[in-house]
Length: 147
Image: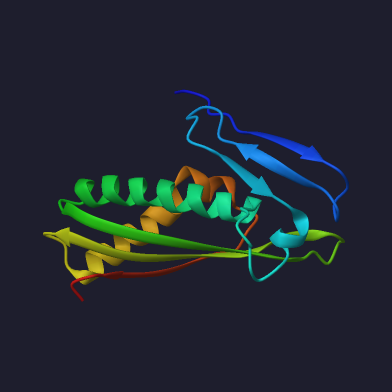
């Protein structure tokens, strides 16, 4: 399996500095980052590590869900996954990811609501990004879009 690469170039200190995150492997873009905007309610046109983790988690989860739904005998028609990644203070000092919520709406032919929910839980446990984030509380809000 391939290795994917991203690069960040940072200038200045934490509060007065800023940087650019480059998605090097895909070359799809370079995005601005800054700590004050990371910690603000309004991102002001910048991304953050938390948003990038949310993107990675939602994409990985959708792929895992689709694979498991098919293995369960269903026909995955659509899966919409939103990942909310929260940053907060770490009691040990600094900051930490305080939680991730995966909101999943799926349309899977041939599976009832209970089977879709079972697949959703299995995908949460089996998604490689979920596995990488085992130190973070991950909650699941899933349902069939037909329910």
